[in-house]
Amino acid sequence: MDRAQKTEEIDQLRDRFDRMVNAVLTDYRGLDVEAMTELRRQFREAEIEYKVVKNTMVKRAVADQPYAADLDEHLKQMTAIAWSYEDPSASAKVIRDFAKSNDKLKIKCGVMDGQVSSAEDWADMPNLPQLLSMLAGQMVSGPQAIVSQMVKPAQQLVSLIDAWKEKLEKE
Image (cartoon, rainbow, N blue to C red; front, side, top):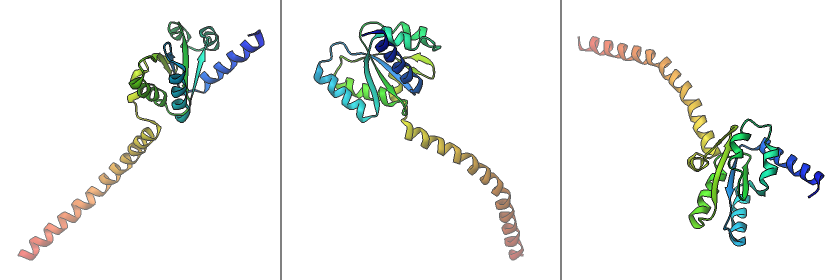
């Protein structure tokens, strides 16, 4: 690979890291071609980009990022990266489901919100539609509580008038 090709590869990696919602670094040692093909198919279905990378290229691509030093310790041995551009939990879920039938794939770490962390916990995170639904529920509950509190005095007044009416009718 000549210098121009390396520069282009580094630029493409940098672009992927800039656009990502998260990235999961994996160690794919021991996966045969059939298993790797199946894993790539599952990633494509989930709209996740998965690429075998050279560690030195990744180091150069993220050198200006605040998480570069933390990521550096995970860039050893064979590395492939799964970039998710929309759903933050999608890549971890695909890896978790794939690992149920194939224990060769190992998660090295994950990068999200400028921090390097363990990606195993991401698989339990709600997906994007679930997060949006939860947000919508929270947005609706606030105004509902306000309206409920605004109506309460009127309801109490009606109850009071009703009780007074019943008292007058008994007398």
